[in-house]
Length: 274
Image (cartoon, rainbow, N blue to C red):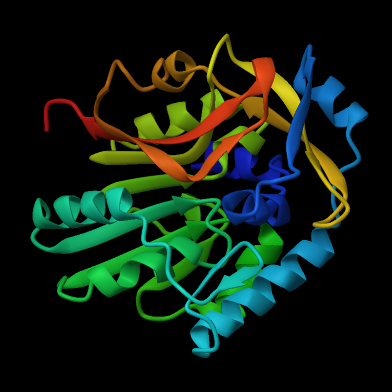
């Protein structure tokens, strides 16, 4: 699984931006149509990785200590925004596997999705939820947030052959990868029974483009490269081996305007012939 690790190493996720987009997307806009990812990187200002990790760490601690109900990438909330399409998929996969659930959560920060779903998973016999993340997140995760169910790793190679996930989750991550198609292909190669792609921007009109995401000073003034996808390009890397069994509107809603208007969507795919 060194390929997964290579992808992760090259990933520069604007986690702080994802959080505010998730609930407070007013003022966040997309700008431009760049020829390639490198050109978009040169034209954008980036983000403070240390500040992001500190905020995510603090927010996750608030949830674990019972001071907040939920968090998403550095922002805390007093209610849990239950991701019911994901929860339904997790339960279905578990039932088909003897009430045992193994989740590969790619780019899952310090376990945000795990904490949002766990209330509905209490009756399962066995839960293994592994977040594959960058080195600095994995270090904090292992030291402060791991438990009997939640684990952290930089790659599947760290987990060994005993970890065979029955759900792969890619939530709010695909659009910030330089080569998102490579990640989808690697998930297909794992032959996971279910793949959930959530919180992904789909252009209302037009083909997939590379744009920049601009965050106002009132949140955290910054710019990041971002893919705005056509629905066909999400599916083309999966369709041969998986069938789409559902799609849904993600909690992020719509961002942008004009030709860059994007609706955030989620997709559930099931492996064919299983």
